[in-house]
Amino acid sequence: MDTVIAENPAHAAGDPVAEAERAAETLRQAKLEIAKRIVGQDEVVDLTLAAILSGGHALLVGVPGLAKTLLVDTLGTVLGLNSNRIQFTPDLMPADILGSEVLETATDGGRAFKFIDGPVFCQLLMADEINRASPRTQSALLQAMQEKQVTIAGQHRDLPAPFHVLATQNPIEQEGAYPLPEAQLDRFLLEVIVDYPTLDEERQILVSTTGSEQSVAQPVLNGESLLALQSLVRRAPVGDKVTEAILALVRSCRPEDASASALVKDSVAWGPGPRAAQALMLASRARALINGRLAPSMDDVVALSRPALRHRMALGFAAKAEGVTLEDVIDAAVKGACG
Image (tube, rainbow, N blue to C red):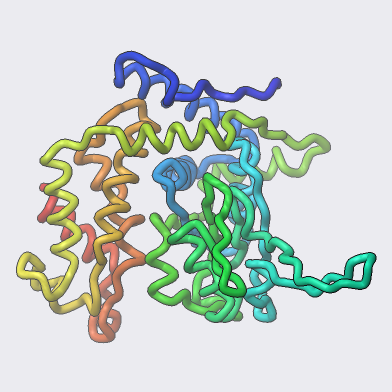
């Protein structure tokens, strides 16, 4: 198959609805290419694409062997992005991510410091098993994820555009895994749970991955066309009803807010901040675009409530002891805010 680079939506004049339809067709082609290597996991693919289209980062959580790394690698190919991979381990240091200055000797004998770029200087960074590194190393990504730049030796260095981090994480119950700090979690637009495949999907995986030939995905987008799609997402109109529902949902998940239910006040230790509302707004627009719609609906907010809120909240000790889950709390808040 020949490489297909989608028409830049920013250059497509005319009806905004038609513009959204063209973008949806491009994304449909991208999903077909992803499906060549990823069997099933439609919701995981949609959520990850929504995070990227929103200009954000995604945290993929699941046990080893569920194709999280393969998905990120495939996305780098299909989106046509310059990508790097970092395998996070306990001995990984911040300089292994950001880069460092080295003393270089010139031919005339003069010496000067030269900066060597780290793997973070790319468009798509795969942070593989991010919670197996120390908190000090994990924090090396904080500035990069928020400001799209890093500060090394007092000098600000911009990262390429677009810049996205797709991190994979093993469940914290597994040996050798460290919980990510709250500030790090909040930098991820969405938390995507990667679950086991169905019986039919696992049968297809077994057959397709143990033969002599392996499927290869082809590029559909590039950095410029992805930036154009991200611009289209931010220009998508959002109705007042959806905006108010997002605000009501996020605020009702904070135990100190007057709108919080008894369940939230009794169960939640701390609730989501403003980034949660921003994530819901952007991801709802992106999800609508993936499905061929220009404007998001209440269904988009409901579908994205768990991925946008789950990693930005924490349960109290008593609630955990009673078997309450964050999903229970979020679902109850969704019913109250979104009907």
